[in-house]
Length: 365
Ligand code: NAI
Ligand code: MG
Image (cartoon, rainbow, N blue to C red; front, top):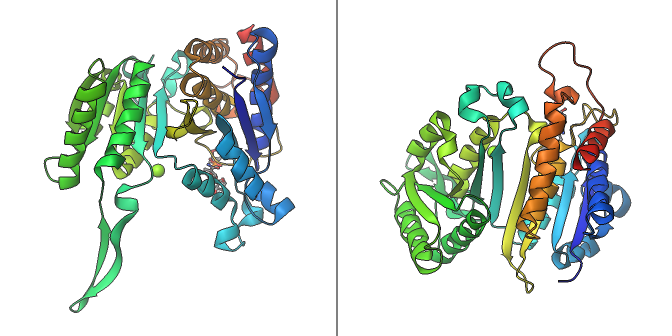
C-alpha cells in the first residue's frame, strides 16, 4: 500500500503546541518503526482567517478530501469573538466535517490506571475501562425539519423533529461494526424504541445490517435511558456503543467524564469509505484552544497524541502500533509524570507540554 498521507491542521491557541508533540511521535514512527507518513501542514480557524480572511481556504478543503486522514489541533480564541458568524474559526472545523460528510463521531472513554483515582466513580469501576461511543453526527433531531418556534393559538410552540432514514442508520451501524471488529467485537445499540418510531426503525435496521454482514460481532440493544444507568453502574460491560445524534451527545460527554481530564480525551469523525477502502477521517482532541493557558507550555498533549493513535488504528489498520502509543502514555503516567491539568496530590512538579511529549517518546523507545 502507498505511504499513508496525513494533513495536519494545528489551528489556534494550544493547538500548535500539542500538535508539535504529535509531530514528534509521527517522526518517531518513520525513524524507529520504518512507518513513514507523508505529512502536509496547513492552516485552519483563526490562523487561516489571519492569513486568508477565511477560516478554511478552499485549497485546504480540497487537500483534506484527498488525504487518508486529517489531524486537527483546536480552533478559536477571544481575538475572533467579534467576527461575523460565517468567518468565525469554528466555521472552518464545521466546514471540514460537513464537506467530508463525517457521519460517525467516535468518542472513546479509556481509563489509564494511574489516573483511576481522578474519576468520580470508584477505582474498581473505571480502572482499565476502554469503551467507544459511536454517535451519529449529521442527522437526527439537530437537523430534522420542521423545526422552529411557531405560533399556535395564543401561545408559542418550540419544535424539533427526530428523523432518520434507513441509509443514515445503516451507514453508522456499519461504522460501529467495523470498529468493533478492531476492538472487543461487541456492539450495543441504544435508542428508545419503546416510545419513538425513529427508535423502532433504528433497532430494526441495526439488526438487519448485523444479520446480513456482521453476524460474527456480538450485538445487543438497550433503551438509551437504561444505557445511561448501565454506563454509570458498570461501564466495562460495553465495548462499542452506537447511538443517534442526541443520545450520543449526552452519553459520550457523560462517558468521557468517567475517566477524568479534558486534556486526555481524543476523538475521531469518520465518513464513507474512500476508493482505497479507508474511511474519510478527521482526528482531533475533544478540548478547545484553551486561551487561558496558550503560549505557556502548560497544555497536556496526550489528547492529541491519543487522537493520532486512533488514526493508526482506525485509518491505517495499525492496531498494534496504536496500542504501543497508548502503552507509552500509560507508562509515563505510571512514572508520575503529570502536566498541570492532571495534578491532584500536592508535591508533584508539573512537566511542560514538550517534556510530556519527550517522555512519551522515551517510553516508545
Ligand atoms: P477549552 O477546552 O479550550 O478549555 C476548557 C478548560 O480546560 C480551560 O481551563 C483549559 O485551560 C483546559 N484545557 C483544555 N485543554 C487542555 C489541555 N490539553 N491541557 C490542559 N488543560 C486544558 O474550552 P473553552 O475554554 O470553552 O474554549 C476556548 C476556545 O476554544 C473557544 O474559542 C472555543 O470556541 C474553542 N473550542 C474549540 C474546540 C475545537 O477546536 N474543537 C472545542 C471546544 C472549544
Ligand atoms: Mg456535547
